[in-house]
Length: 104
Image (cartoon, rainbow, N blue to C red; front, side):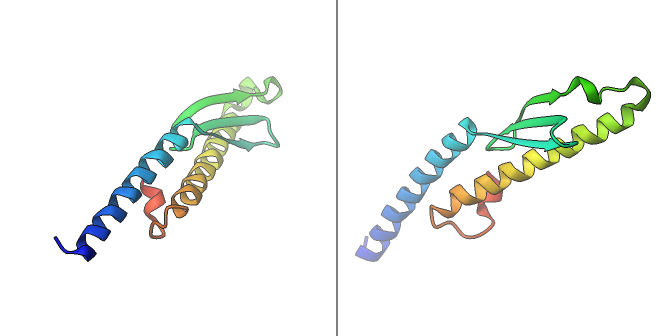
């Protein structure tokens, strides 16, 4: 194996090791998204896994369940968007091409 190929393999191993470390960090990280001025909060992992929903009692109105559903969806979307941004930031530190952070 020539030197250039060996150097590429070493670089690939380093990148793979870095990706595994970042994936572990993202799995342990928590990101919050909110809606309704903080009345609904969604917590997701850095990998986008929904972990928790917090709903302020003041927002619970049995006659307007649709509004609560909309607030929950908005909070979850906000949290997932923040999670994706965190993944992009962490993956960019590895020198990965733009967009690959979205895969994790």
